[in-house]
Every structure is written in structure tokens, then in C-alpha cells.
Length: 270
Length: 324
Image 1 (cartoon, each protein chain N blue to C red):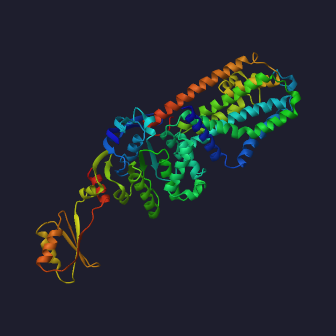
Image 2 (image 1 turned 120 degrees about the vertical axis):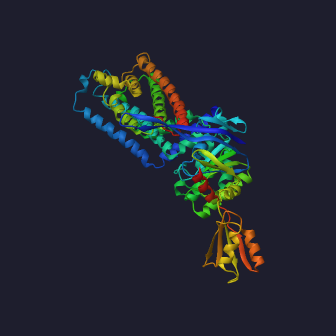
Image 3 (image 1 turned 90 degrees about the vertical axis):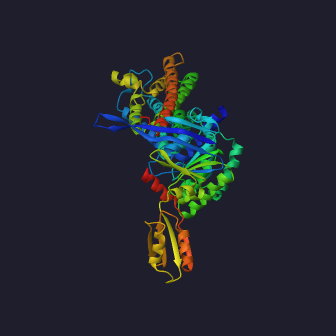
């Protein structure tokens, strides 16, 4: 059972890699956009006096790292929104019908899709960021065990986020609006550019919707403020809760979606 | 054997009645379908567009849940145990969709083999065999986007066989192919049924294909089976008038002679003379071959040829659909 699950997941990863990353230029494009956004955000902070900020882990010196951490995490999440959007074409091209025709574990398929996109899309950005981090290492104040745990949690959360979107995109004929709803607002409201602590009340409420908010808050505290696990406990617990919640919703979506498709004859839930 | 009993499917669709209002409408796509598909046999499912062929195939392939009735595949209930049944069946659809164009032919088969959980060693061997069977071994490492239409369709057939299913549902597998490639594909289909012993359910709009391949045919109209039988029997059943062609030696008999001889048997007979071929064309609801040969013998008219036109399944389908 487990072997078949892994085989299906691996096959899906390889298929997605060959279908969507067939050209090396794609990697350049996946790097250029976050890089440009990062540069634009960084320089828009420049005219202001950051040192007078009320945010504990943000000052003039570590501004670059602060924003870069935001964009790395954003890259993980963004890549999965795009992968889900790509996967929705499986429904249009008819290949989804053949996937449903097989006894494959549906969860394995969308997990494979999410994993493939996650690593494919962000590795160039990660390599770039590591380079910057090495150059600016003196501005870091890292708690290493907490950093490993929060970063892993962020990756798991990104995968779950991607799978959730995959599950939604899979069954929705009009799912392209989700791309618009989730892509830009996530960048604005999750605190990628501006910390959520300085948001007005209404914007803070919106920021709670995006799992990236919790991951980013914990990562910045750990990387820039040397916060230990106890200090980011609430963010970690929130992240775990969100991961579990997304896991339940993903499975529910897959079951309901297939049930609906079998009842109506089309792969469109909404 | 696949046994289908009283299969029915009703769709619920919404009809818009203004911006906020919509009415639910029940649409009976398929009703009371009973059929059997044996291993090693090719069963045809015919009908005009919208007759319910694709709905039936989707229900048999577990993609669609019937509203009523039962489907058993080798004794397994396909509605209660779809995951078990999925291992024994597969589907091939016509057209160029449903395969990954950026993957090579071999990669496509590998992917589908993996999602069926086939062991790697067995899969590699099976891919070789299937590529060989459909004759695209030489193009196995070429991306599908560079394949011709016929090659894509051959790959579809190979994909349909990847899990070595006992039963295959083929929905217009030769759609849009030229005569030569369609003929080649028909040979593959025949081979799959006769040599490999797989049960095939085939839908097609090409009647010649059905006549050539199918052992038994079900004709669907408005979701119901209106006729069933062998292609030959169905063609005969659908034949309203028989057409007999008679060519005799020049000027050995007059038109009136033939007409009067035929009228004695069938009052409503139509006799025409085809000047181009210099032959008589006799159309009647009755078999007049014997009457004509007796007439020629008695009047010492030398017959050059006397034959009856073969009944066509296509005419039968049209007639059944009109009558229904």
C-alpha cells in the first residue's frame, strides 16, 4: 500500500517536472519575479527611518534579511498556487479522467504535484538567498534548533497549502479566480513586505486567513531575534493546527469532489 | 463477464430563469440497459449523438454512478467496489487529448503504469510489448507533440492496455483518422480481443468498423436499447426494401416483361432501368430473386448477373432511430 503510494507520488512529481519544467528558461522566470519584487520592496523601505520601528526584529541593518526571508517563504507558497493552477488543466485536457479511472491514491497524486512544484520553483531563489545570507551573516541572530523546526513547519505548511489549492482547483471549473484571490493578497496581507503587527485591525483579520502569516512571523523572530521555541510557541501551535485543518479539508475536498464528479458526470464541484 | 442489469442514469440540470432563479430539470440519459460483455468478444454500442453511449461507458468504467441498476465485473459489484473493478478495466477514447504531449510515448506509458502500481520490472517489459504491439517502438523516446494523429491514437490504445485489463471500453477509437490508419487500428483491436482474450465494448460512428469488428451490437436511442443482435442480423432487420440487380443480354427482354413478372409477386414493386450499366434495379419488400430467375429461365433470357444488394447496418441504425 505504502509502496504504491510512494510510486504514484514519485511518478506524479516526475510527470509534472517534465510537463511544466521542460525548458530551462522557466527557472530563470521563476527567479526573476520574486527577485524583482524583493528589490522593489527593499528600496521602497529605504527613504524611511526603520530604526524607529515598533517591530522588535526590524532595524536598518537587518532590513534586507527581513524582506528576503519574506520573499523566500512567499516563493514556497506562490509556487504552489501556480502548481495548483497548472494542475487544473488536467481536468480540461481529460487526463484527470484517466487518473480517476485508475485505483491510484488521489492524495498521493496531489502530494506529488505539490512536492514537484515546491522544489522546482524555489531552488534558484533559495540558492540566491543563501548567497545573500552568507554575505550578511553578521546581521543574523539565529536560534538554530528553532530555525530548523520553524523552517520545516513552513515547508510542510506550504505543501499542505498547495495540496489544498490543488484539491480546489481540481474540481472547480471557475477556479481561476482563486489564483487572483490568493496570489497577490497573500503577498500583501501575510506580512511579506510589511510586518503584520503594524497592520490596521481589518488587515490583521485578513492576514489570519493565510498560513504564510504564522510561518513568517515565527521564522523572522527565530532568524532575526534569536527567539527560542518557547518564544514562538504560539506560532508553532497555530501552524500545526492549520496543517491538521488543511489535511482534513484536503481529504474532504477529494472525497466530495470525486463523489460529485461521479454523480454529475463532470469534474466540476463549484 | 461484465453483466449490466437495468442500468439507469438521471442527471439533474439547472435551467436559468432569470438572474437569481433557476429550475432543476431531470434528464434521463440512460434507462433500463441490460447487456453482457464476454472476454474475447467485441461488443458494439451504437446510436446517434446523445443516445447515451458515453454515459453508459462512463458508468461501466466507474467514472459515473448509476441512478439505478447493477454492474458486475467477473462477479464483483462495480458500484460497491469500484477500486477493485478499476484494476480489471480500462478505457480508450478517440481524439488527441488525454495524453501528455510533452512526455514521450514511453514516459506516458510509464506514468500510467506507475499510477496503477505495476511493478517496475513488469512495467518495463509491458511497455516494450505494447509499443511493439501498436507499432511505435521507433518513436518511443520522441515527445508526443511530435507524433502524428494516428500515432497518438495508437499510444492511446497502448495506454488502455497498460494495466493488462480484462475489459476495455473504446469510445470512438478511430475518430478523425484516415482510412489506412483506421484499418491498422482495427487490426490491433481485433488482435486484442481474439488473441489476448480481452472483452471490448466499442462505440463508433463508422458502421463499416462495427460490421468488421463486432460480434454483437446493442443499438441505443434516447438512452434505451432499441435493438440488439449480430451486425448482420441487425442490418437485415433494418432493411425495409430489398434491392435486386439484374443484367441480361442486350435486348433479350423488354422492361414490361420484367415489371409484369415482378408485379405478380409484389404489387408495389419498383422496377427501374439503369441505362449506364444497362441493368434492371428492382426494389421490393419481398425477395424477388427467385421470381426473376424463374422468369428468365422460362423466357430463355440469358442472365449476365443477378444479385441482391447487401443490407447495410448504417441504414438499419437510421431506420431504428427514426422509428423509435
